[in-house]
Image 1 (cartoon, rainbow, N blue to C red):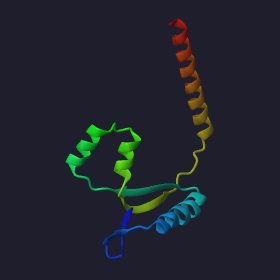
Image 2: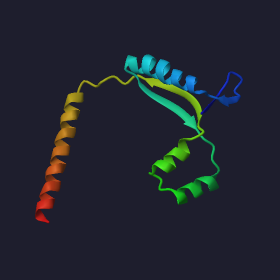
Image 3: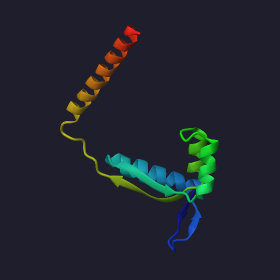
Image 4: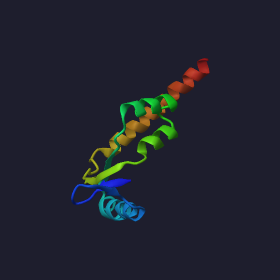
Length: 113
């Protein structure tokens, strides 16, 4: 993985630096404070290479994902405050009810077949 230095020159991000970001910044810094974390990176890939990859691999395959996620350029990690909403318990109950209802519908369809 690469990143940019202070002069905006691309440079290799070594394993120790990667772990420092994951542990110090994400785990100890942001997640400990209850923040959602988002990291951003990119990869320049010619269209023809992407097209060849799409023809060679299914877009949901591990091979496709590994190819796209290799040699990324790390831009940064951000923490976002996302407090728990007051009505979260009600939302969870609605989700459970909807899941239970869907399971019952699936079972009844299976019994008819």
